[in-house]
Image (cartoon, rainbow, N blue to C red; front, side):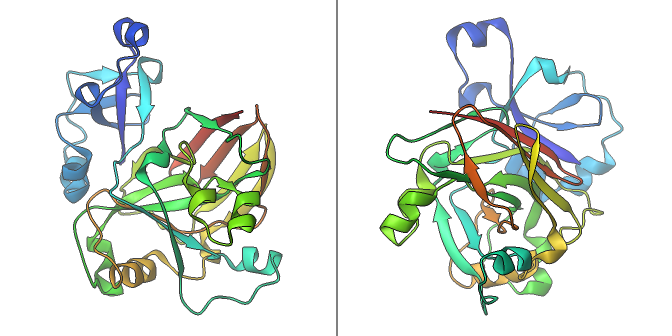
Length: 276
């Protein structure tokens, strides 16, 4: 199922820009409309099988896409990212395959939703897109074995690891380049279907309709279960935490006014515009 968080796009909220936690709603997309659920996304991810079984029951509160404004589908305590996790990206950079995952972090304050605006920072002149499949954690865990990882993975979503590449080179580490507000678009849905195969998803990115990245998640160096095992050996994973699994080849720059669309097979399309 495709779960999401959203706001009701009513006139009062639009007039007052009153999109607060008190107005935040949770639901799922049934292929035609949004069905509101009376639960948090954290609780839903721990028992999505139950919601799948009950999905035929019609809710009294339903919305069309025109009725809603997307919110980030989760509120993580941390966003753990993986550098150089696609074979084609390593080949593109003429780099050896890593022997273990390369970790870095993005702050929760960098998160924005589907259709939100990416802000081009004044101190950078080279901002790149990076299309990524992201894991959403469903329950707390430490020192998780790869064989147990699926018990801690609530679902998968789409993430754009926006990067100020010039600052990354200048700083020789990645905090500033990866951490600007709006530098982590994520969404629009969390896909929880048991039939979802994270290692056989077509992943692509378009800028203004022009294809820039195209690959398949089967080209990952470290699979999601391996990433969960490795990361949880370092830090505790909490419900709602996000693991960005790396980007394929074709990374490049965005310019002010560009519209960026990331598509991942069974999840959907994450769309954002960047403005200076």
